[in-house]
Length: 114
Length: 113
Image 1 (cartoon, rainbow over the protein chains, first blue to last red):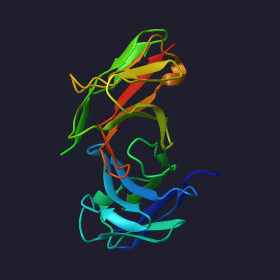
Image 2 (tube, each protein chain N blue to C red):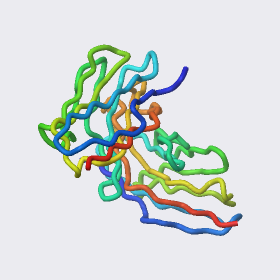
Image 3 (tube, one colour):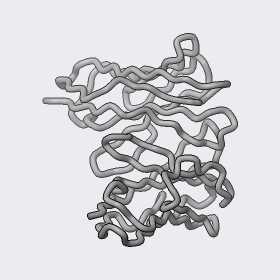
């Protein structure tokens, strides 16, 4: 298996533009997580899905952020409009969903909003 | 709510030195505990885990013991190498939380030859 695949790896966009980050989880995993990593705040859980259904989105910073999982093999995180303070590395992870199971992380998308 | 606190870095050690990175947690019920490692430019990888009290997780010379009485999960290695330089994250997954991980702030380790 190729692991969790995220695209793009790097994204530079202007303030106010829409940004879409993409994730393909590992086949057979039924939980998917979106995290954001910054120097100031560390790793924050934004949202997680179980069987394609959003379970906890309490970490989504504001209405500018939205996430979807239309099927078991694809998820998106959208920011509209983007702001400079959204600059961060965004990670997608997937797991089989049990509390004691390993989460597998993608390589992340480094987003820079100028 | 659940939370994880780990010692601040950066930690700088000489090769072959002993490593300890402290981690304590707050959680209800019986969480599982993890250490993840992040090498530069990469995502996080599982280093080791423990799923119940007194369990010891180990991998690549690293160890951590799940101590419920002190709510701790300290990471140790007897002799570090330059290749161990990375950021280490302590994390917990709460009971019946669908695998959701709560991370500590991360500790950067730099090992000098």
